Amino acid sequence: MSVVVPDGESPDNFVQKLVTEIKGQLQAAPHRKWIDGGEAMDLLGIKSKTALQKLRDEGKIRFSQPQPRIILYDRDSIEQYIEKHAKERLAKNIAAAVGEVSQIGAGEKKGTRARDFLNEL
Image 1 (spheres, rainbow, N blue to C red):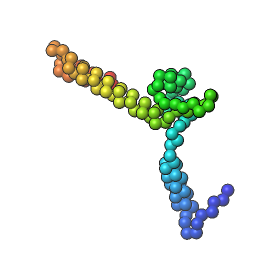
Image 2: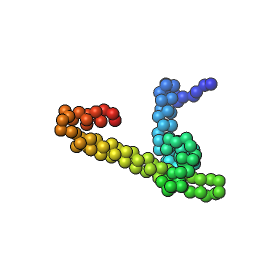
Image 3: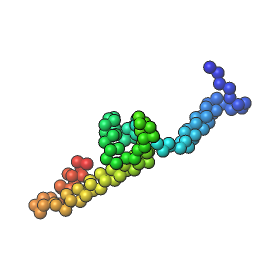
Image 4: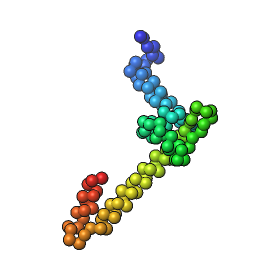
């Protein structure tokens, strides 16, 4: 296979410019608002359709059903769900760490339980 490059430009330089242009176009491509179940499961990191259905049934992620056998998921609501749970988990770990520090016994070396707890995280 032969590649035609503009006069005065090295093939390596031309390929590098082409790759940069393609990457820019891919990054600039807008995300679709509504995605299918496979993409939703990929975003959520789950492999089970049942787990996806449970999230849908519990109202934790938005969906649309334009036809009886077609279910689309709102990408923004999935991203919000992921963010919400990331923050809650972090808040729980911080609260637990604060609770451990405040419950250090009088006979223990100061900070030992808190240090052990944080090392377990």
